[in-house]
Length: 235
Ligand code: DX5
Ligand code: ZN
Image (tube, rainbow, N blue to C red; front, side, top):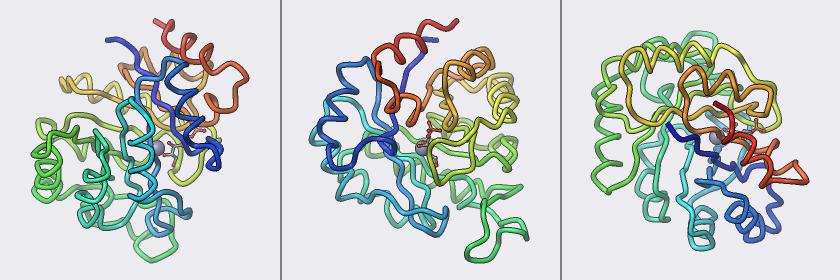
C-alpha cells in the first residue's frame, strides 16, 4: 500500500494557517489532519467547526477531522457541513468507561467494549454523506473491541500517544494493534497518530499502517518536503 503522510495542523502557527496549508500542499502531504479537542474528552481545547471550515476553504487537500470530544454525534453534521472529507470518532465515546476515567477530569478515557450498534449508526451517518468514516482508539483501549464493526469502518486511527497534545513520545503498543487489524483482514486505511518520526515510522509501516499522521515532526522540520519524501521512501 502507498504511504500517505497526513499533516496535523496542531503544530502549525495558528496565526498563519493559510501559509501552513500551503507548505503542506507544496511538501507532498496527502491529507490535512484537524485535531478537534473539547477540554472534556481530553485535557486541551483546540479547533471547532468554524476553523475547520476555514481550513477546508484554504486547501485543495482532503481534510480529516479527528474528534477528541464527548458526544461526537452532536457535531458530526457541523464538521461535515464545514467541508471535511473524513470524520474520526473515538471508540471510547461508545462504551462504558473504565472506573479510573469515569469521572470528569480523569484521563485518558478508556473502554473495554464498544456499543457496536451505536457506533455503527454514527459511522453510517458519516458514510451517508459521502465521507470517510473513521474510528480512533486510545492507547489503553483494546483494538479487539472493534471486531464486530470492521465492515462499518473505512479507516482506523490508532493512537500512539495519549490524546491531547502534540510532541509526545510514541507508545509502541500501537504496533500490535495495527498488526491485529490487518490479520483480521481489515482492508481500509490504518492511520497512526502520535510520535511519528523517522525512527518510529519503519515499525509502523511494517506492522501494516498506510497513513502516517504527523504534527511536530513535520511542522518542526526546516525541510517539510524532505520529511514527507523520507517517510514515503520507507518500505
Ligand atoms: C494528539 C493528536 C495528534 C498530534 C500528533 O492528541 O491527535 O494528531 O497532533 O502530534 P505529534 O505528531 O507531534 O506526535
Ligand atoms: Zn490527531
